[in-house]
Length: 147
Figure 1 (cartoon, rainbow, N blue to C red):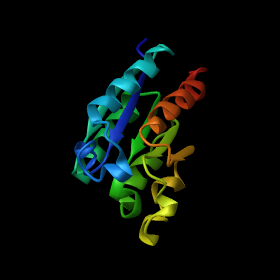
Figure 2: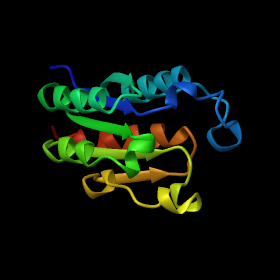
Figure 3: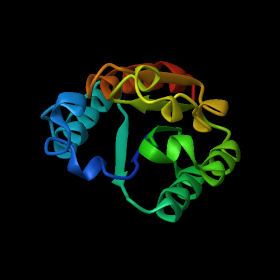
């Protein structure tokens, strides 16, 4: 049986490496994908990796993951602070969910301090740069090891 982990990325993460490198660093989303695939492979997991600037696409992938995945890692980006719809989709999932943020959202503007997604997440990783994805995949492997 294929053991799949979805990794979903929200708006503007397609600009990693170009947008505000002092906050987000110089690695690209392709670098993040490769990092996730390597880390997942160490535990016999496969990655389905998506990015969208559209909330409805992210929600559609969450629904898809409900049927095919053992867990989901999500960097909802700006939807972290605004999307009750994304929270509702994640709340319909019975598998582990890990929320990742490249920057420490709690050290940034006050409107970034609240996360709707955190209400459903089994773990939250913030402020570790893109290495947060690697940490999330390591923790996910532990969470789904008994699946």
